[in-house]
Image (cartoon, helix red, strand yellow):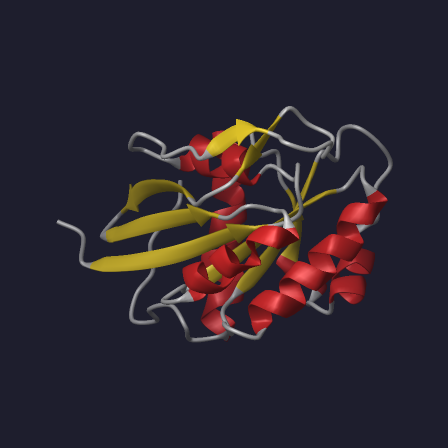
Length: 184
């Protein structure tokens, strides 16, 4: 039986790997809200609702809520913030325009939540990317909160959550502090 629940919001620009990240980590059937894109967004499908998955780690049930990247769905961002314990903001490192969108998204979300945040740089294998330190400066977060992540790899996605829980969350006290758990 799970003693604690941690709600993690997974956000970021279109095509940054949010649905893939949630799908990769979920131990239960993944709730997928992708449909064919009705406009040119650089990919065939797009998320139009809230993707959902869960995973259990020790005595913690982790609820993963992936939100659409398109700004027209920002009402879902706001609704999903309710009760969130942490934020994983994914950014496609090979798309410079994504950093502008990510900064807007982060500022929007920070109006509703003040929670531990990790910036996950995806698609780092496709081109030269900004160093994490510079991304942190641009987005206004400490450099140790910026990590490379392959959303397709469970090991890489778990490492992102491990950093969130072990390094970032203890500094904020928004997640339980009376113990620890392992994401290995």
